[in-house]
Length: 441
Image (cartoon, rainbow, N blue to C red):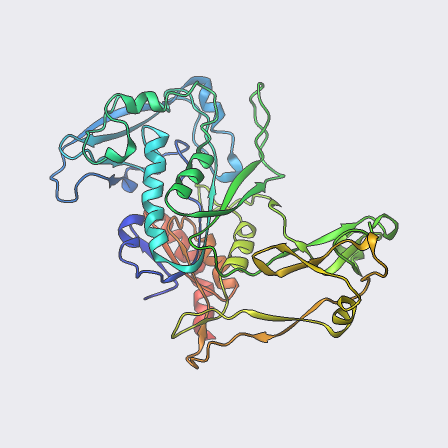
């Protein structure tokens, strides 16, 4: 299987060609529902019969008009720069088999959008290894301006599993104007219904988000990042946040971590970092958005990819059996003596052996100030003697190639799928220097 490549075309089509259980990690951000028009060149046919000689009833639909466009146009930080005002799109259903022709993200109802997304992630689940991880960034949408209504009616064939037919498809999505559609949550629930295990809902806090001009609600300064797996046991490397205190006198000796080294430079003259490892990383990530001048579409920052790829994709994978290497952690001699005094380890997460933390300091004698708890004593080895390569990260909505860029920087490999040929050119130009550097090495 070729790696470090961008496949131009429909995500479902290319996913079906990838080998089963060949991917270590998925990091992606699908097109959000009803937020922008990517152009006619990215239209696809969804559902129905592959053997049908389609007869599509293509109609024009109004998606936004008047003040409701203000609800969705205010996310300049994500590259959404559509013009406020009336917005129309053309799509339709096949009168023979019920297939729908249009863009992913511009479906007449969000139920249809979520169905199409989950169809794609069913294939993602097939190609993901049993120990693989899947990370999906998805934002919400406000209803209004005709966006959640449609004159198109699906044919009974092709969408039977939606559990609603004909005109009922309209009523199902008939939310009140100005209401959040709750699309991320609906998507996450449907993913769980499809057999995925949802491990975390991560909040991407964007401190530099563009102010909103609306006067009757608060500015939204966050998005969601869902962390899915397909099995209870999976490859994961714990990541840590430094624990910061203003000064030594304010450090709670009963907390779970011990005082490590001073952090005067980065955190201020009086700051103290607790523990050289820090605490198990939290689920609210403060990451500023960064513009990408070559793209006029939504681009997430590299930093949003770094932790998922680092924690969810191994750097060393056996070229023969595919088993990843893991760090071998052992207690230091000093910490072993400390544990022998009657203290007890508690797992930060009962499934994660690397997240051990010591608790109950205030109720016991002694302390762990200055003690290094664990040391890395090499990496596991499968014994195949076939060499190791970086894990493979898949992004089925590759866009400008940020996922691939971060993968290469972490000595890992990528496969990108992108429908728009213009975006493929942008990503190829962006990744070219890093790919050439890899070849030289």
